[in-house]
Image (tube, rainbow, N blue to C red):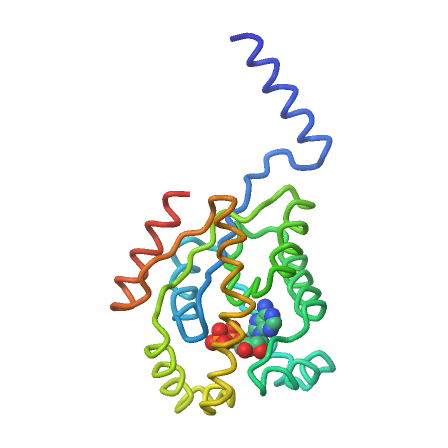
Length: 215
Ligand code: ADP
């Protein structure tokens, strides 16, 4: 018993030296799924419930594009064709956003990581902060439903990449070829969970909440 107390004391002392005293580990959720699977809609609700910071790489790129920044102009070349923005650009932008928000309770990563290289960069970066991915939750929606949803969203979103059927097709192909394996990357660490992404917004939100509450 007393040995345990001594061990706990030593642990607290090491944490203090490392500058991580009194710091709770953050909750870092990867919200995963194909384009149009409802990540953005659910992320907005999760932010309210769990007080996490939502980082959507798609939104960050659209913000840069809107401001016509060099990063935005570069990203637009790829996004308009339904391709992925190169990893170095995306990873740099993501790290800047995380770095700028050190005091949050955790993050909801939406649209990132989308490649194995991005997943490895995220793991390494979080580890350097004494953090890790808490869970990857994938919204499972079949392909025909996704195409319908994206075309419908294109009617009002103003997003050119939602209005062109061949660009949508390419985004889905890229998802299958490069992104889907990110699920397996975290499954190997027993961190991946797939939930049904069809139903009402509240039904899906309840499934997500259960997955988060069991972390
Ligand atoms: P959706 O998931 O509905 O396709 P997003 O808003 O997440 O839309 O992303 C829009 C586009 O931005 C993607 O098709 C891709 O070109 C680019 N993008 C977003 N996130 C990443 C990422 N992590 N890596 C590379 N490109 C990305």
